[in-house]
Length: 494
Image: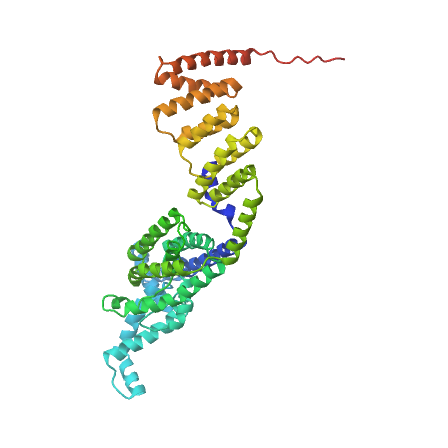
């Protein structure tokens, strides 16, 4: 549980002030979308509850007695029939709060008014000509828009068939599904943190806002085609194309090795994830968004390739590093390398971290005279970091530390290597070394006995097994001594 919590909290270790501000804004956006999405559903539940409560009151106080007055017993069947009639009358006075259901009801109501209640005649009187089917559709849409414009999820969304281009400024504040919002939170923060290592953060925000606004224009272009024309009356919202743009910028750069390979791979997988969400989980018009996603990913790639790196920060860093290289001693360079490796590990730069730490700790272990406390401190920090270091390197470090007579560091290094190693011979030797060191230092002798027993279990007749048996005898003696050690006597004087 502790490890899982540590992994979950890891990204927050290197968050800056504007990251928290961004998360706060995203949280507010999430609350806004939840409220606007679920408010009609909540109202629907309240309406159903109110219908039942008001009917029960009316039934108990009035209607049941009316049946008794005419000689009928008001049983459950009669009550159920009366409830359905009451519900219909109630909904005539207070229509359903579910917007989509209300639109369907309005279509039927408008058709009835148009055909049977003088709607056509009124149109002809006002416009001086008898209405065509096209004019009927236009009047129906106008009537429905008057209703839907009361709700932000309709008024702020972009509908290509309506041509409400002013909604390009607001449609990115709405999300079509919870999946889209979760995807946005994760990968916008990922893109922001990665891109600001090369750009100033302000440019990431500017690109994001601009792409979010103009994405409606590109969706409009695709919906004008025959295949996607069927979705022209649907609502476009969200920031899928903006996220794809930023992900593309995370993949391409002029400078070799400027982008870690894992960042590039995650960005490419995220593109596929975004397309899958828009194609399979979101309704019709988002199929057009899925088709346009690779195009925006490529646009982002161009921006990433041609956008210059942050000049000021890089220049200062280069000058500082050059000065440090000129004045630093080999020992200082070694420690600087370890510190930079630990920082890279905390920032998720695994390849860079592993390279720096391997060079740094190897050099530290070779120093003469050995700095015992510095080695132990460095080993503990590296062991607790998230750097991906090969198991053979851990074990090699452990063997060196054992040779240099730094048993605590050697045990830590060997145990780290043992947890990942797959070669049976290397594993057996590591078990022996850990057991030997623990016996020699009398550090957790029981654990030492377990390690040595694994050595013997693998092969009980070779030289290593014989040495392990001797060490186990020593370990037993230590355990006996510890068990029978006399407690200190304290004399109490009056």
